[in-house]
Image (tube, rainbow, N blue to C red; front, side):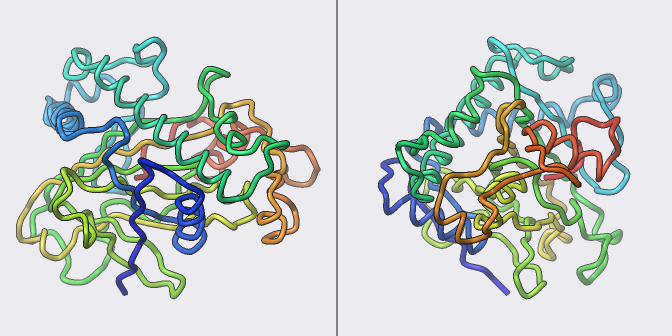
Length: 328
């Protein structure tokens, strides 16, 4: 089953744009946004993918020096950047990444600005009254000047697989990243032409391929950004905005081609100490009745964003691991 995820231009947004985003997020949990007019260009994206390729093709010893863990489940490599401070990474970088620290920080800033723009549109689409914060209701809670957050920029590399090592059907040996949903508010995914592999779980419990260049974008300078709703924003809106399970597979046509796959993801989270209080939206209230309240198990204490993230990580990986290196 091939889902037709909407493609939306947010470069000159209106209330109609906001309504279209809400509709797509409520139905699919995913939406494409046109990548022009957002502070991005072909050179910037090509440069980021060149940096990513340089890093992943560097000697294994260099990568092991900065590794935080080994993922033995999915056949891929990933590197996470936490938030930058004054253009500097707050973590060790390999010799392949150090010369590009400023460029990477700049790209992360652009990604966050795109997320802020989207969050404002979601607030408009949810009809949050100006007296309650209006279009700034979500964006203020993701304002990085107000404190640290769990936001992450992730480089991803899926090495080509020997065709004889894969199966002829859709079994585990063809899965590059297992089925999962994302933990935060929003995820931006940047992909390369002719490097497919992402699939989303449909309401019918079947897997639908997600095109890199959906119809109508083939002549664009670069593929549209694929945006998906994370668990936190879904919980915050009582499930009105859908956090959809997805995975990465090795498409059948690439089993023969033996081509690497690269992607870049930006995971946007609220500021750590943000209290996940009710979203003041009648649409949210009508959808769930609990007004987006996210509470601790067994009591009425409202969770903070960092508590929500730690709880999700703890349930999956154990309390010791604070950064999830495994998902796309």
